[in-house]
Structures are given as C-alpha cells and as structure tokens.
Length: 357
Image (cartoon, rainbow, N blue to C red; front, side):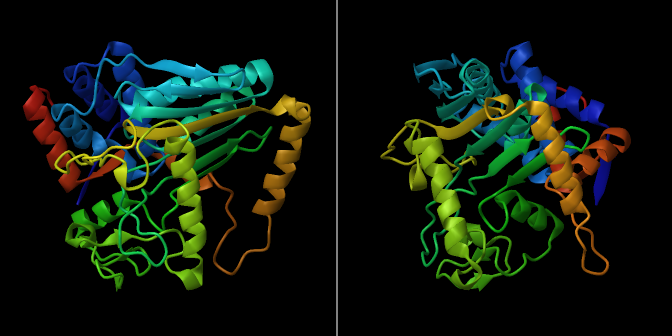
C-alpha cells in the first residue's frame, strides 16, 4: 500500500525534522532539498525513506548537525574537504561548490571529501554543474555490503557514479547509477513489499545466488554490477573499487570494509583507517575544451540521434536521465508515493519530535 503526499508536505516535515536535530536553517533547507530530490526523481530508496536513518545516526552521535566544514589541502584545481562528521547532504554540496569555483578559475576542479556521511543521490550533486555550463561528476563510497567477484566477504559499498552533461535544446544527459546490480535501498523496498529479489542481485553467506531480500541480515552480500563473472561482475567490481579509492583512499576517509555503516545499530570498525565516509566531486568547464554553444549543439545532435535509434518492438531508446526527469515533473505536480512502512517511520518521527505528519 502507498500513500500520496505532496512535495510541499514532505518538504515542510523533513525541514522541521532537520531543525529538531539541531541543523541551522540554511543546512536544514539544503539537506531537505538534496534528500527529497531522490523522491522527485523516482529514486525512492535514497529519499525520505532514509530520514529516520539519519535521525538514528544523529542520536548515536555519528552525525554532527553543526559541522565546521573546511578545506584541509588544495591546489588551483584540487582540494580535500573535511566534513567534520556533518550530514553528507550538506557536506557534498559544499565540496561541489569548491569544485565548480576551481573549474571557473582554471577549467577543472576536483574535490575529495573525508569525514562525511551518506550524501543522498549522486545525481543531485553532479547536476549542480549544469547551471554553469559545466560537466559534473559525483561519487561516494558507502557501507560495505558488496562482495567482490569470487568473494564471500563484504568489502565495498554500492559506490554510485553520476555524470551530468549539458545540452542546448535537449534535456541534459544525466547518468546516475550504483556499481552493484541493484542498490541496497531497492532490497529494502522489496522487504517492505514482501517481494523476492531478482537473481543476480544478491548471494548468500556461502556465495550462492539468492532471491531472499533479507539475505544481508543472514551474512549474505550484494553483487557487483553484472551479477557474476560470466556476466561481467569483474567490471562492476572494478568500478566500485575506483569509486572507493577516489572517494576515500585519496581523501583520508575510511575505505573498503572500514567504511562506516549507514545503520546506527551496527558498530564502527574497531581499527579505522580514516575518518567517516568519503566522496569525490568534479566539475569541468565546457569552454575549457571548446566553445560551450558548439559543444551543447553537438550534444543535442548526439542525444537526438541516440533517442531515434531503431528500437526493438514495444520498447523505446532512452537517454540517461529521461525516466528520472519525467518522474520529477509528474511527482512535483501529482505528489510522491510513500509505502506504508515508510509512512509508519515518519509517523514515529513525528511523535518523537512533537510534529504533525
């Protein structure tokens, strides 16, 4: 069962929850915008369904709602940002601003972040660059839930990658994807709906394929993009490893199996190799390569031609970002569906903070 809520209603409630957690007005507004951008784009696993998880992390004193976010090292085109254990929903936009400022000055900007937390959907951060005729990139490491190819031990997170590229008349190209076959949040949705997972998403603790969406609780693991070696899981493993290294090894955050879990009831690793979670944000000014109008006109041609590619019967060829953009406009106008289990979580939050929901 799902209930439809207006974006305005969810925004007001979420903003108030962040305020009650101790966020400043500006940080609460920004965190709300970033979080709900996932729901608007149809990525329900990373939106308001995560709100109670942030509250629990704050209660466990693993999120600092008044962080002193700062640059700890920089060159004209690069920087390392220390998020001071802040909400990733606030830390990552700060880092993206640094990347875009550097790109504006020298053509490109690259920022690796340490001491942060879950930052919502990667696509939000990459898309900020579009407003300045820049190409944006965003990635983050995450809770270790993924077994590398041929492994049974959980070593990597879902470690998403997002790239946003501007066009002229066409909508922008926006790729935003986990480096696993499916994100953990999709398993959580299946659990709430009491449905099985498709083969290739997860394995049990012995490395056997499973369709049980609760398998992670039994010692199982998510699978890299591809699912198994025969279908290219080694490539998904490589992509996830690259994200982990750029986001965490490069910045001084925890990496691999030391990455802190999103759920508050799991303990932090006793022998941390860094601080917090890590992100990697980048921006490239288009006119650092060629005139922006020429490039965007060529992107229009690229997008139009790919969208017009001959499709198999009953299907249409999509450009990365098409489904999310359509969902965004539909949900902004018609409301956001929230499953019953999440509604219950939000009602519990309302009671905790003496709010109406």
